[in-house]
Length: 504
Ligand SMILES: Cc1cc2nc3c(=O)[nH]c(=O)nc-3n(C[C@H](O)[C@H](O)[C@H](O)COP(=O)(O)OP(=O)(O)OC[C@H]3O[C@@H](n4cnc5c(N)ncnc54)[C@H](O)[C@@H]3O)c2cc1C
Image 1 (cartoon, rainbow, N blue to C red):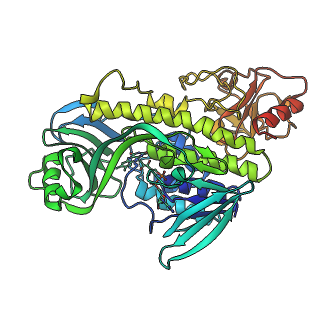
Image 2 (cartoon, helix red, strand yellow; image 1 turned 90 degrees about the vertical axis):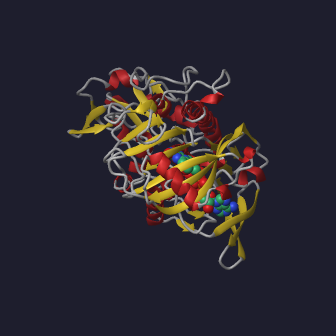
Image 3 (cartoon, rainbow, N blue to C red; image 1 turned 45 degrees about the vertical axis):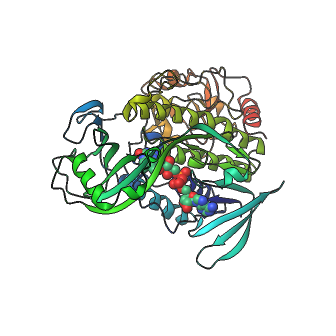
């Protein structure tokens, strides 16, 4: 086995799918019996959807997607509104930044889609299979797996281990990696219920209300399953409360308060306890083991970024491991996983904590609350700074509507013409390394150089390459290097750059 992936949530299934897509022999294991039942993470940013597109699952994800979202902070569904984050008539139009749509599918829909596709691409995924221990040496990882139905323990040897075992995962601890952060923020009861709330929720959209009600603090969200909704209610262990204080009848009363429907007769589907927290692992990798998703960081869900980050982590480690396993890169490339993903995760956690205070815990406002980063900037304008790019400076953020094309930033979306057809530059990426240029003198330099024309005249400016320069784009659509002009020996230059960024 080349890669063992522990966990079949959004992080683990993404890593598994994107490894299998590149022909890597991958085994995924999960101790649970199936994928998520709780709708949890709803919403895929276009950046995540670009990856879904590459995985061949864009349509399947969108099939479970309700169009648009309304987000407010309010007393109840019909009560006083304290803040409108996305208004009823608002739309996220990010078409200037990406050819991919905004997804609004929930986790219980997306996980089975990723699972089916990973298996179709040749991955093996076993449920009710628990990693009980592992060791690593210079050539690989040896893992002991417990088959829960039979109680039998087997051993698997893999070149690498991806730990996507969630926020309670044990792999991080096993590696001796500490985590730090604000820790537990609040405890919640999540009530999944079916009820007809027509007239109380936005039609054909996800309705997300953060609730600051005199009776409780929590959140209400509709799902993409007809009539299905979720209410989360904060409870207080410090006041002696526990989940046992929330039997079904009390939950029904709270649902009536939250929806302003005093005679609501909901059908309760599930009541689960969960903890909102903010944690960061001190390192995202150790030797041949890589932490992905909630195993690496835990973020408050205020901002909808936990699931998106898990998918993007999975994509990132997959292309890097595949490059090393195929002999296209040296093992040094793998250091960039921690160098790039950890600062991003920290920004996600800080921004989500900022949102948490704004939306659910105003009593915590104070100088120690970090400034949030604008979600569009965080999603499209956060730079990768590592040994896998040749950055000219160390700026971390830029406005993605005014891209500079500098190495480390996402290669911008520009509509160009290839073979007489209009395509987005973004759709040129994801299958290998691509050199973006308008000058045919760069062809034959060892990577794909699509013959492009630039009818809008934006390519040269947004990539900072003029008519004769070139931009070298990695398989994750990030600029690794660019030259503003033609160089004397293009092939030798590209070879030299690849040798550095791929640790060849
Ligand atoms: C109520 C709620 C609402 C949320 N809302 C959003 C949102 O709107 N948007 C968003 O982006 N995110 C949201 N999130 C966060 C999102 O759900 C998580 O970030 C995401 O599930 C993390 O995925 P993961 O794959 O890292 O871990 P998980 O989904 O936790 O998966 C962990 C996996 O590891 C397996 N596992 C654990 N230990 C072992 C072991 N020893 N052996 C084998 N398998 C093991 C489990 O079986 C499971 O398959 C929300 C979370 C909650 C709780």
